[in-house]
Image (tube, rainbow over all chains, first blue to last red; front, side, top):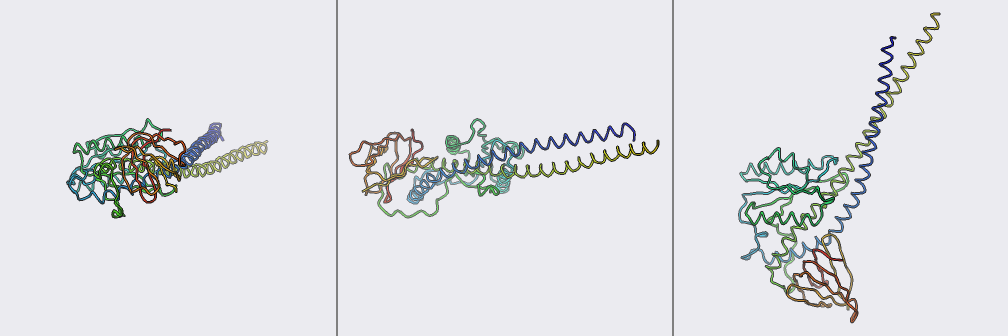
Length: 299
Length: 85
Protein backbone atom coordinates (compact mmCIF):
# COMPACT_ATOMS: atom_id res chain seq x y z
CA UNK A 1 0.00 0.00 0.00
CA UNK A 2 1.29 3.40 -0.94
CA UNK A 3 1.40 6.28 1.44
CA UNK A 4 -1.33 8.07 -0.48
CA UNK A 5 -3.83 5.25 -0.25
CA UNK A 6 -3.56 5.00 3.51
CA UNK A 7 -4.00 8.76 3.76
CA UNK A 8 -7.21 8.47 1.84
CA UNK A 9 -8.56 5.88 4.18
CA UNK A 10 -7.79 8.02 7.20
CA UNK A 11 -9.49 10.97 5.55
CA UNK A 12 -12.63 8.97 4.86
CA UNK A 13 -12.69 7.80 8.47
CA UNK A 14 -12.45 11.41 9.54
CA UNK A 15 -15.14 12.34 7.06
CA UNK A 16 -17.47 9.69 8.42
CA UNK A 17 -16.87 10.90 11.93
CA UNK A 18 -17.73 14.42 10.80
CA UNK A 19 -20.94 13.28 9.15
CA UNK A 20 -21.98 11.33 12.23
CA UNK A 21 -21.45 14.40 14.37
CA UNK A 22 -23.38 16.65 12.03
CA UNK A 23 -26.34 14.26 11.90
CA UNK A 24 -26.19 14.05 15.68
CA UNK A 25 -26.48 17.80 16.05
CA UNK A 26 -29.34 17.87 13.53
CA UNK A 27 -31.06 15.25 15.62
CA UNK A 28 -30.62 17.41 18.69
CA UNK A 29 -32.35 20.27 16.92
CA UNK A 30 -35.28 18.22 15.65
CA UNK A 31 -35.65 16.66 19.08
CA UNK A 32 -35.75 20.09 20.73
CA UNK A 33 -38.24 21.37 18.16
CA UNK A 34 -40.42 18.33 18.77
CA UNK A 35 -40.53 18.98 22.48
CA UNK A 36 -41.26 22.66 21.98
CA UNK A 37 -44.11 21.73 19.62
CA UNK A 38 -45.52 19.29 22.17
CA UNK A 39 -45.56 22.00 24.84
CA UNK A 40 -47.09 24.55 22.47
CA UNK A 41 -49.67 22.04 21.32
CA UNK A 42 -50.85 21.61 24.87
CA UNK A 43 -51.22 25.37 25.16
CA UNK A 44 -52.99 25.71 21.83
CA UNK A 45 -55.43 22.98 22.77
CA UNK A 46 -56.17 24.68 26.07
CA UNK A 47 -56.82 27.96 24.22
CA UNK A 48 -59.17 26.24 21.79
CA UNK A 49 -60.94 24.66 24.74
CA UNK A 50 -61.33 28.01 26.49
CA UNK A 51 -62.82 29.63 23.39
CA UNK A 52 -65.53 27.04 23.00
CA UNK A 53 -68.17 28.29 25.49
CA UNK A 54 -68.36 31.72 23.85
CA UNK A 55 -68.60 30.29 20.35
CA UNK A 56 -71.29 27.83 21.40
CA UNK A 57 -73.44 30.41 23.11
CA UNK A 58 -73.02 32.89 20.31
CA UNK A 59 -74.10 30.36 17.70
CA UNK A 60 -77.13 29.52 19.80
CA UNK A 61 -78.11 33.17 19.99
CA UNK A 62 -77.38 33.57 16.28
CA UNK A 63 -79.56 30.61 15.40
CA UNK A 64 -82.58 31.81 17.32
CA UNK A 65 -82.28 35.34 15.95
CA UNK A 66 -81.52 34.47 12.36
CA UNK A 67 -84.54 32.21 12.09
CA UNK A 68 -86.69 35.24 12.92
CA UNK A 69 -85.11 37.77 10.65
CA UNK A 70 -84.25 35.72 7.59
CA UNK A 71 -86.61 36.18 4.70
CA UNK A 72 -87.75 39.53 6.00
CA UNK A 73 -87.05 42.68 4.07
CA UNK A 74 -84.04 44.53 5.33
CA UNK A 75 -82.24 41.48 6.61
CA UNK A 76 -78.58 42.42 6.93
CA UNK A 77 -76.44 41.90 3.85
CA UNK A 78 -73.98 39.77 5.78
CA UNK A 79 -76.73 37.24 6.33
CA UNK A 80 -78.77 37.54 3.15
CA UNK A 81 -75.87 37.92 0.71
CA UNK A 82 -75.56 40.32 -2.19
CA UNK A 83 -77.91 38.28 -4.35
CA UNK A 84 -75.02 37.40 -6.65
CA UNK A 85 -72.53 34.60 -6.75
CA UNK A 86 -69.92 36.02 -9.09
CA UNK A 87 -66.96 37.29 -7.09
CA UNK A 88 -65.40 34.88 -4.66
CA UNK A 89 -62.86 35.67 -1.98
CA UNK A 90 -60.73 32.87 -0.60
CA UNK A 91 -59.41 33.60 2.85
CA UNK A 92 -56.44 31.32 3.41
CA UNK A 93 -55.07 31.02 6.92
CA UNK A 94 -51.50 29.75 7.15
CA UNK A 95 -48.74 29.94 9.70
CA UNK A 96 -45.55 31.98 9.57
CA UNK A 97 -43.13 29.17 10.18
CA UNK A 98 -42.26 25.99 8.42
CA UNK A 99 -40.93 22.75 9.91
CA UNK A 100 -44.47 21.49 10.24
CA UNK A 101 -44.64 18.80 7.61
CA UNK A 102 -47.34 19.24 5.02
CA UNK A 103 -49.44 21.51 7.24
CA UNK A 104 -49.20 24.65 5.14
CA UNK A 105 -49.09 23.00 1.75
CA UNK A 106 -52.24 21.01 2.52
CA UNK A 107 -54.19 24.19 3.23
CA UNK A 108 -52.79 25.89 0.14
CA UNK A 109 -53.61 22.88 -1.99
CA UNK A 110 -57.23 22.86 -0.82
CA UNK A 111 -57.53 26.58 -1.59
CA UNK A 112 -55.96 26.28 -5.03
CA UNK A 113 -58.18 23.33 -5.92
CA UNK A 114 -61.22 25.39 -4.97
CA UNK A 115 -59.91 28.38 -6.93
CA UNK A 116 -59.48 26.45 -10.15
CA UNK A 117 -62.92 24.90 -9.68
CA UNK A 118 -64.47 28.36 -9.32
CA UNK A 119 -62.49 29.64 -12.29
CA UNK A 120 -63.79 26.77 -14.39
CA UNK A 121 -67.32 27.90 -13.51
CA UNK A 122 -66.47 31.35 -14.82
CA UNK A 123 -66.36 33.07 -11.45
CA UNK A 124 -63.72 35.53 -10.43
CA UNK A 125 -61.43 34.62 -7.58
CA UNK A 126 -59.39 36.70 -5.19
CA UNK A 127 -57.24 35.72 -2.25
CA UNK A 128 -56.91 37.13 1.22
CA UNK A 129 -53.84 35.59 2.78
CA UNK A 130 -53.25 35.29 6.49
CA UNK A 131 -49.74 34.29 7.53
CA UNK A 132 -46.53 34.15 5.59
CA UNK A 133 -46.31 30.56 4.43
CA UNK A 134 -49.18 30.65 1.98
CA UNK A 135 -47.89 33.64 0.06
CA UNK A 136 -45.27 32.16 -2.24
CA UNK A 137 -47.22 29.21 -3.67
CA UNK A 138 -50.45 31.15 -4.16
CA UNK A 139 -48.66 34.10 -5.66
CA UNK A 140 -47.00 31.74 -8.08
CA UNK A 141 -50.34 30.32 -9.21
CA UNK A 142 -52.39 33.54 -9.13
CA UNK A 143 -49.99 36.49 -9.27
CA UNK A 144 -52.72 39.05 -10.03
CA UNK A 145 -55.44 37.83 -7.72
CA UNK A 146 -54.05 38.60 -4.29
CA UNK A 147 -56.45 41.08 -2.74
CA UNK A 148 -54.60 41.49 0.51
CA UNK A 149 -52.03 39.89 2.75
CA UNK A 150 -52.53 39.96 6.47
CA UNK A 151 -49.29 39.95 8.38
CA UNK A 152 -49.06 37.90 11.54
CA UNK A 153 -45.28 37.88 11.90
CA UNK A 154 -45.38 40.63 14.52
CA UNK A 155 -47.49 38.70 17.00
CA UNK A 156 -46.38 35.49 18.55
CA UNK A 157 -49.77 33.82 18.47
CA UNK A 158 -52.61 35.23 16.39
CA UNK A 159 -55.49 35.84 18.76
CA UNK A 160 -58.80 37.63 19.00
CA UNK A 161 -57.32 41.03 18.19
CA UNK A 162 -56.06 39.67 14.87
CA UNK A 163 -59.42 38.04 14.16
CA UNK A 164 -61.05 41.41 14.78
CA UNK A 165 -58.76 43.16 12.30
CA UNK A 166 -59.28 40.47 9.67
CA UNK A 167 -63.05 40.78 10.00
CA UNK A 168 -62.82 44.57 9.73
CA UNK A 169 -60.89 44.17 6.48
CA UNK A 170 -63.34 41.61 5.18
CA UNK A 171 -66.48 43.55 6.00
CA UNK A 172 -64.99 46.70 4.48
CA UNK A 173 -64.24 44.80 1.28
CA UNK A 174 -67.71 43.29 1.35
CA UNK A 175 -69.36 46.66 1.79
CA UNK A 176 -67.31 47.99 -1.11
CA UNK A 177 -68.62 45.19 -3.28
CA UNK A 178 -65.25 43.54 -3.78
CA UNK A 179 -66.74 40.06 -3.37
CA UNK A 180 -70.06 38.23 -3.04
CA UNK A 181 -68.99 35.08 -1.26
CA UNK A 182 -66.07 34.46 1.07
CA UNK A 183 -64.61 31.07 1.90
CA UNK A 184 -62.22 30.40 4.74
CA UNK A 185 -59.49 27.80 4.52
CA UNK A 186 -57.75 26.46 7.57
CA UNK A 187 -56.77 23.20 9.14
CA UNK A 188 -59.00 21.46 11.64
CA UNK A 189 -57.17 19.79 14.48
CA UNK A 190 -58.20 16.16 14.93
CA UNK A 191 -55.14 14.82 16.69
CA UNK A 192 -51.38 15.26 16.67
CA UNK A 193 -51.32 12.81 13.76
CA UNK A 194 -54.28 14.10 11.77
CA UNK A 195 -55.07 17.64 10.70
CA UNK A 196 -57.76 18.08 8.12
CA UNK A 197 -57.69 21.02 5.69
CA UNK A 198 -61.12 22.55 5.93
CA UNK A 199 -63.17 24.92 3.84
CA UNK A 200 -65.95 26.97 5.34
CA UNK A 201 -68.20 29.61 3.88
CA UNK A 202 -68.10 32.66 6.12
CA UNK A 203 -69.82 35.41 4.10
CA UNK A 204 -72.76 35.43 3.67
CA UNK A 205 -73.14 33.82 7.05
CA UNK A 206 -74.62 30.40 6.46
CA UNK A 207 -77.85 29.59 8.25
CA UNK A 208 -77.09 27.97 11.56
CA UNK A 209 -78.59 24.52 11.85
CA UNK A 210 -80.78 23.45 14.69
CA UNK A 211 -82.43 26.79 15.28
CA UNK A 212 -85.29 26.34 17.65
CA UNK A 213 -88.35 28.26 16.74
CA UNK A 214 -88.96 31.12 19.09
CA UNK A 215 -90.65 29.55 22.08
CA UNK A 216 -91.09 32.34 24.53
CA UNK A 217 -91.89 35.94 23.89
CA UNK A 218 -88.39 37.30 24.09
CA UNK A 219 -88.10 41.01 24.48
CA UNK A 220 -85.48 42.58 22.27
CA UNK A 221 -83.64 45.68 23.23
CA UNK A 222 -83.11 47.34 20.69
CA UNK A 223 -85.06 45.42 18.04
CA UNK A 224 -84.04 42.18 16.33
CA UNK A 225 -82.51 43.80 13.25
CA UNK A 226 -80.25 46.07 15.24
CA UNK A 227 -79.12 43.28 17.51
CA UNK A 228 -78.45 41.08 14.53
CA UNK A 229 -76.49 43.81 12.81
CA UNK A 230 -74.24 43.94 15.86
CA UNK A 231 -74.12 40.24 16.30
CA UNK A 232 -73.10 39.27 12.78
CA UNK A 233 -69.62 40.86 12.78
CA UNK A 234 -69.06 39.41 16.21
CA UNK A 235 -70.11 36.01 15.00
CA UNK A 236 -67.69 36.32 12.09
CA UNK A 237 -64.92 37.24 14.49
CA UNK A 238 -65.48 34.15 16.58
CA UNK A 239 -65.50 32.04 13.42
CA UNK A 240 -62.15 33.45 12.31
CA UNK A 241 -60.78 33.31 15.83
CA UNK A 242 -61.83 29.68 16.09
CA UNK A 243 -60.14 28.94 12.77
CA UNK A 244 -56.93 30.63 13.93
CA UNK A 245 -56.95 28.55 17.09
CA UNK A 246 -57.57 25.34 15.18
CA UNK A 247 -54.74 26.30 12.87
CA UNK A 248 -52.34 26.83 15.76
CA UNK A 249 -53.15 23.49 17.31
CA UNK A 250 -52.84 21.84 13.89
CA UNK A 251 -49.53 23.52 13.17
CA UNK A 252 -48.03 22.34 16.44
CA UNK A 253 -49.45 18.87 15.97
CA UNK A 254 -48.05 18.61 12.46
CA UNK A 255 -44.75 20.03 13.62
CA UNK A 256 -44.54 17.52 16.43
CA UNK A 257 -45.17 14.59 14.12
CA UNK A 258 -42.78 15.86 11.46
CA UNK A 259 -40.02 16.43 13.99
CA UNK A 260 -40.62 13.04 15.58
CA UNK A 261 -40.09 11.44 12.18
CA UNK A 262 -37.02 13.55 11.53
CA UNK A 263 -35.52 12.57 14.87
CA UNK A 264 -36.14 8.91 14.16
CA UNK A 265 -34.65 9.17 10.66
CA UNK A 266 -31.59 10.88 12.06
CA UNK A 267 -31.24 8.07 14.58
CA UNK A 268 -31.32 5.49 11.79
CA UNK A 269 -28.78 7.41 9.77
CA UNK A 270 -26.46 7.69 12.75
CA UNK A 271 -26.66 3.96 13.28
CA UNK A 272 -25.85 3.24 9.63
CA UNK A 273 -22.97 5.66 9.58
CA UNK A 274 -21.56 4.28 12.81
CA UNK A 275 -21.56 0.75 11.41
CA UNK A 276 -19.86 2.00 8.28
CA UNK A 277 -17.33 3.88 10.38
CA UNK A 278 -16.51 0.84 12.48
CA UNK A 279 -16.15 -1.36 9.41
CA UNK A 280 -13.72 0.95 7.70
CA UNK A 281 -11.76 1.40 10.90
CA UNK A 282 -11.48 -2.36 11.24
CA UNK A 283 -10.47 -2.70 7.62
CA UNK A 284 -7.76 -0.09 8.14
CA UNK A 285 -6.40 -1.92 11.19
CA UNK A 286 -6.46 -5.25 9.38
CA UNK A 287 -4.51 -3.94 6.42
CA UNK A 288 -1.99 -2.33 8.74
CA UNK A 289 -1.54 -5.64 10.55
CA UNK A 290 -1.12 -7.48 7.26
CA UNK A 291 1.52 -4.97 6.25
CA UNK A 292 3.43 -5.44 9.50
CA UNK A 293 3.26 -9.26 9.29
CA UNK A 294 4.27 -9.23 5.65
CA UNK A 295 7.17 -6.96 6.55
CA UNK A 296 8.27 -9.23 9.41
CA UNK A 297 8.08 -12.31 7.22
CA UNK A 298 10.21 -10.66 4.55
CA UNK A 299 13.08 -10.29 7.02
CA UNK B 1 -83.65 31.95 44.98
CA UNK B 2 -80.61 32.23 42.82
CA UNK B 3 -79.91 33.48 39.38
CA UNK B 4 -77.51 31.53 37.25
CA UNK B 5 -75.07 34.05 35.85
CA UNK B 6 -72.49 33.41 33.15
CA UNK B 7 -70.01 35.86 31.74
CA UNK B 8 -68.04 34.66 28.73
CA UNK B 9 -65.46 36.30 26.49
CA UNK B 10 -64.02 34.86 23.28
CA UNK B 11 -60.97 33.66 25.14
CA UNK B 12 -62.45 32.23 28.31
CA UNK B 13 -65.37 31.62 30.60
CA UNK B 14 -65.01 34.39 33.15
CA UNK B 15 -67.86 33.58 35.51
CA UNK B 16 -70.34 30.81 35.95
CA UNK B 17 -72.07 30.99 39.30
CA UNK B 18 -75.33 31.45 41.13
CA UNK B 19 -75.94 34.97 42.37
CA UNK B 20 -78.77 37.05 43.74
CA UNK B 21 -78.96 39.85 41.19
CA UNK B 22 -76.98 41.29 38.32
CA UNK B 23 -77.28 44.82 36.97
CA UNK B 24 -76.50 44.88 33.26
CA UNK B 25 -75.51 48.05 31.37
CA UNK B 26 -77.80 47.65 28.37
CA UNK B 27 -77.56 50.00 25.40
CA UNK B 28 -80.98 51.35 26.25
CA UNK B 29 -80.37 51.67 29.95
CA UNK B 30 -79.28 49.60 32.88
CA UNK B 31 -81.48 46.80 34.01
CA UNK B 32 -81.37 44.49 36.96
CA UNK B 33 -81.92 40.79 36.53
CA UNK B 34 -83.30 38.62 39.30
CA UNK B 35 -84.28 35.00 39.12
CA UNK B 36 -87.37 34.43 37.01
CA UNK B 37 -86.81 37.50 34.85
CA UNK B 38 -88.73 37.55 31.56
CA UNK B 39 -86.66 36.50 28.53
CA UNK B 40 -84.73 39.48 27.19
CA UNK B 41 -82.01 39.91 24.64
CA UNK B 42 -80.11 43.14 24.73
CA UNK B 43 -76.91 44.60 23.45
CA UNK B 44 -74.54 45.81 26.13
CA UNK B 45 -72.66 49.07 26.07
CA UNK B 46 -69.20 49.53 27.51
CA UNK B 47 -69.75 49.79 31.21
CA UNK B 48 -69.92 48.07 34.53
CA UNK B 49 -71.74 44.89 35.38
CA UNK B 50 -72.73 44.81 39.05
CA UNK B 51 -73.00 41.41 40.63
CA UNK B 52 -74.90 41.12 43.92
CA UNK B 53 -74.00 37.80 45.42
CA UNK B 54 -76.59 38.04 48.14
CA UNK B 55 -79.39 40.43 48.86
CA UNK B 56 -78.10 43.68 50.29
CA UNK B 57 -74.45 42.77 49.86
CA UNK B 58 -72.06 45.25 48.30
CA UNK B 59 -71.92 44.63 44.56
CA UNK B 60 -68.90 43.26 42.81
CA UNK B 61 -68.19 45.22 39.67
CA UNK B 62 -66.83 43.92 36.39
CA UNK B 63 -65.92 46.20 33.50
CA UNK B 64 -67.11 44.84 30.17
CA UNK B 65 -66.56 46.05 26.62
CA UNK B 66 -69.28 45.45 24.08
CA UNK B 67 -71.44 42.41 23.78
CA UNK B 68 -74.83 40.93 24.49
CA UNK B 69 -76.89 39.89 27.42
CA UNK B 70 -79.42 37.14 27.12
CA UNK B 71 -81.90 36.26 29.79
CA UNK B 72 -83.57 32.93 29.31
CA UNK B 73 -85.14 30.26 31.47
CA UNK B 74 -81.67 28.97 32.35
CA UNK B 75 -80.39 32.30 33.61
CA UNK B 76 -78.41 35.27 32.45
CA UNK B 77 -75.60 34.99 29.95
CA UNK B 78 -73.43 37.95 29.06
CA UNK B 79 -71.26 37.59 25.98
CA UNK B 80 -68.65 40.32 26.20
CA UNK B 81 -65.91 41.16 23.74
CA UNK B 82 -63.52 41.94 26.54
CA UNK B 83 -63.42 42.07 30.29
CA UNK B 84 -61.15 44.56 31.99
CA UNK B 85 -59.64 43.21 35.14
